[in-house]
Image (cartoon, rainbow, N blue to C red; front, side):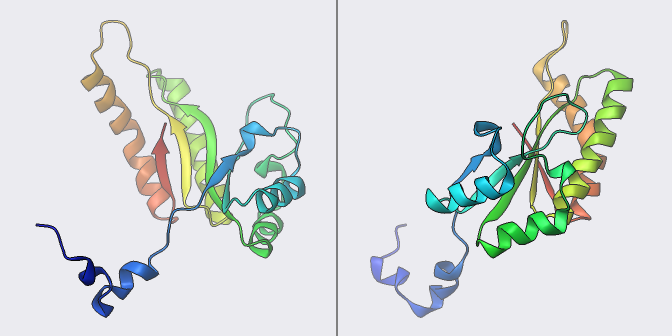
Length: 165
């Protein structure tokens, strides 16, 4: 049943209008040579409400804006002072279905979660797993779920959510 248009103007629905709305953001992947001051200035100039910050922990990729090489308080203050959100801390972490590599990836993911918490960033992005030869999609999904569940519990305790690309 469709509600009459007048219902949406009713004061009883005021909370709906006060709810936070989606903000547009861009990823620092698109601007690896920009430092955080430039990222914030451009985000404001271009009308963005947030930025997805790409983090690099154990990778040899050079970027001028690595949150792991920056004081989290200073970085958070820079964004807060400019009314911008760090909407997501993006990683290149992916479950591999190889025990030793997945243990290392889990340890790295906890570092991303801790950094996101320090930055008051609500999301950490990881990649999904690959379906191995002889494996079907459902069993790969179950394996990913088994691996990520304790990490999701850890993240929830820090007001962070893991999202999978």
